[in-house]
Length: 353
Image (cartoon, rainbow, N blue to C red; front, side, top):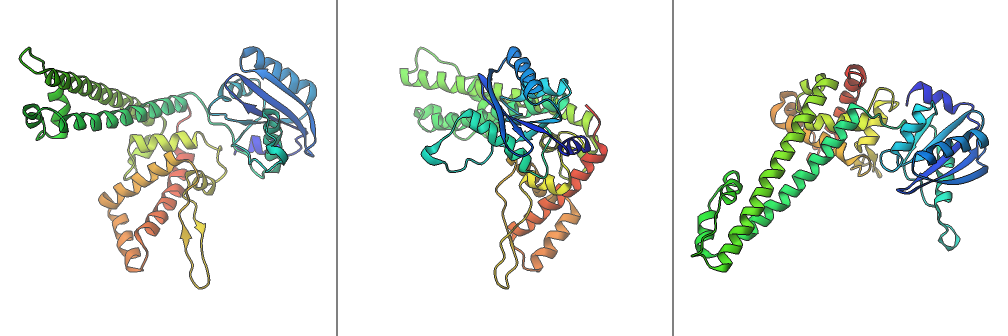
C-alpha cells in the first residue's frame, strides 16, 4: 500500500462500499463510525459511473474512500473511472458473510459490509494497475486456456487411436507425442475405407489440427509475454529458475511499487506465509492453501527449476534433508525465501508502465 492511500485512511469521514455485478453496482455510504448513511443502485455503464460519483459527492462530501469488490472483474471499469477522477480506491476481497436470521443477503447489504470491512482493516490494498500489466494478464490467462484446451484435445486424440480400426491404430500407436498431431493432421479418407474408418480419420484429422492451432496460439501468447516482461522487469529473468511465464505471474500479482506494504504481505498474497501448527514440544508449520494460486504455482515451478540447476539451492536441500526436514517443509522454506527475494527485486527494479 502506498503512503498516499495509507494517509487517506487517516481522517477518512466516509467510506463508500460498492458491490459490483455484470449489470449493476450497489453502493452504500458509511461514516467513519460505521453508521450507514444512504444506499444506491445504478446500472454498470457510463451513466451509472457518473451518477455514482455524483451520489458520493453529495452524500459523502468530505474525505472519502471507495471500497470496491471485484476491482479485477465487474468493478474494473468503475475503478478506472474513479481513479481518473482523483478518487481514493481500495480493493476489497469478498467480505465474510455473517450468519443472519433467515439468511438475509442483498447486494446493498454486501456493499455496506464492504465499507465496514475497509474501516476495520489496518491496511487496505490498492487496485492493480492497467497498461502493460493488464496486457500481461490478458496474454497469460488466454495462453492458459489454450494450453488446457490443447491437453483435452490430446487426450481425445489418443482415445480415438485406442478405439480406431486395426490398421489405422497400428499406423499411429507407436508415434511419439511430437509426431502424433502432425501425422494425424495429414490423414486422408478414401472410397475403399469402411464408414467407421473414414469417420475415425475425419475425427483424428480435425482433432490434430485443433491441437496444432492451440499450440501455435499458446506460443504466440508466450512470445508476447516475454516481450512485455523484458520491457518491465528484465532483472527478473536473470534470477535462477525464473522464466518469462513465471515472471509474468509475479508481475501480475505485484502490479506496481507500493501496492503491497511489505514482503510479508507479498508472501501472504502468494500463499507462502507459514501457518504455525505446533503442539507440545513439536514446533512446525503447515501448508498455506490461501492466496493467489497463480503466484504460488509460479514460485513452486521456480523452486523445482532451482532444485535441479542451481548449486546453492541443491546444497540447501541437502543440508535441510540431513537435519530431518521433509521435502514439503524444505519447499515451503524455499518458496518463502523466494517471495522475499523476488519482492525486493520487483520493488527496486521494475520499469514504470
